Length: 369
Image (tube, rainbow, N blue to C red; front, side, top):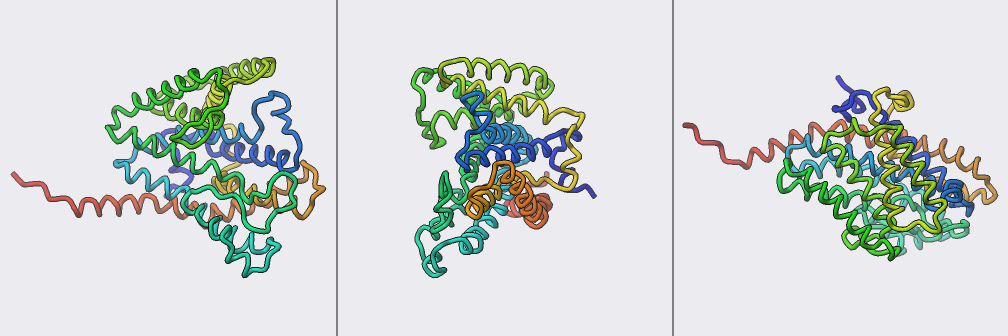
């Protein structure tokens, strides 16, 4: 019987997707280790546009756009597609929120438990179950140098869910038109970006974020989707991605400022390079994920682990924070994969079959000639 890991990428038997997602999650840990200690991110100091953590998130969105689109093409209905996406994101998130509110936050808060549990802030944090952004648990991390947020990494999940819904809406018409609709979506994004070339930051109402975050994350997602739809993974050449990223990085570094077009091109170069490495059939990094895909758990738990370490050891160095966070978060990520994520992924086919049988039960039988 094939394992869960073996069934995730049926179209690419040998690739680097799982390993590269793990590397992207670790880049987020490294970037946040500098930021949460109030230090300058080395990549941001060098390029004046992006941080190591931002690079990791861009990589996540580009690979997600590619893989989620392949999943959509293999799924017979839009409802089943959204159900599968919910199974992948929500169970592990719900466990994290429950542990954060009822165990982690309760152990760290400076308030007594009655005050903590009855606080409106504590109760409001539970709306994270429905992908509504909330940052604080009362009485936690109040003396940390940068911010008191309990889990500042989670803000990307509602944005990714919106990308899923937009992709699903494109597929509502008909799947054979999906590639054209996604292409038009990318063109529309480019038109919006260049229309606001000289305006700096602007708001994008559909995604409720500003232009910087929109171009940095939504563009790589639909770039990955377009590559999956147009059947052009052979165009993702690692050497071309390296050259493009180096060229745009030099341009941004020596320009007086990074305009909207700079953010757009930089994000596309990072996403393109990530897909080029992920799709490489040599499987350079596959050995590090032979025991499971721990990237999502690493992403979910890293921020509160970092905040906790900083609250107990305010003078901790960046290197020690990175190492300790990697170790502790790796343990939590293993538990999340072993007891939450992998069982839910293994149930996908059974749940899909059940939904199909339920749908067929409410259909009238075809007339026999």
